[in-house]
Image 1 (cartoon, rainbow, N blue to C red):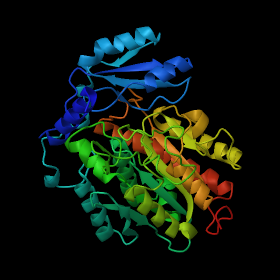
Image 2: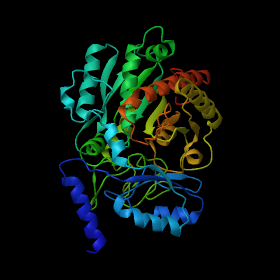
Image 3: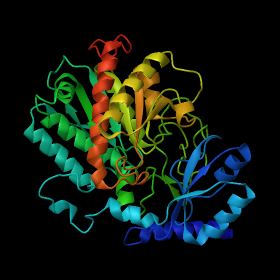
Image 4: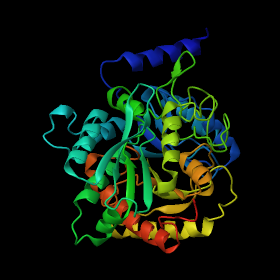
Length: 434
């Protein structure tokens, strides 16, 4: 075994066996624009992982800017990389641990002792699931549904909210398929609560609650999420063993749609954050969830994924610059949604196809749904800063950002449904998928 292999095993072991979460004291975050192919190649060549560099989004193309986490012991190494490749660097976070601490202001409080479920902290998967079951007991229109299973044996649970069975068009929401994107599940649960408690005066939201058959899954990647809570905050993937020393597959590169090992936007390296898996649907999470979605095919008109954090609303395709046949309609829907999202808090989103708006990629859930079911598959990349103060937090949104983020996204869903209805996507017998 060479020295690098030994150090990689040692680093992985430290992360796994530590009794408390890994700390990021004095880790810095730099924003780096990628101007030429040589710079892209250099950034792709940087090894990432525990106690090393981490990307918030992997470098995929020129014209993209990436945020990279740099530990103190690699500062000089990063200086050399930047100087050699003429990389411009903007320091955007001085001490990453401060963001981690702000995200868990109530971490000392026992999660299971909460008197009621709230949005002043991020909850464990057990607490979230218990809350879903409490809604089923409180509301006749709520049914807890199982969408799949995780590698570690957890249920992927969601709620079906349907006040007019057999009469409402269906929307499926998939949230936090990437383990480290906590604001996704926090916002999804807030929106579930708002749909159930909206008053008649809140006409837009009440219309969504009364006239849509909702399938909302707050937390797809439960294993990875618990790992981020208890061990390593930046973990992105599932937790399935890959080889001898690495774990996990990027579950949003693992869907059977134009999938290829190490294809564009993904990696063939089992230790990388965007490892696409040994084959399509290799992960029990994506395989069982896809089977559940197919079982709902006759009920679904629209599919939406919640991610963070890039201030974007995306739609197919990711694997090709060639537009979907429904490109112009999707643009209309996205424009209406983004305009409505901006109105409440002033948050600015961009929108368009995945390939040209964020980066080329393959094996993503929204593309698979569009391909397999023929319905629109949209992806929200939530905001990455406090719109009111301008404070950047990237994917580590403090809990006081759950409500404003969820409010503006729910506003956008009102407009999205209105425009999709106008364009004929929301009929119970939808011609697009029947």
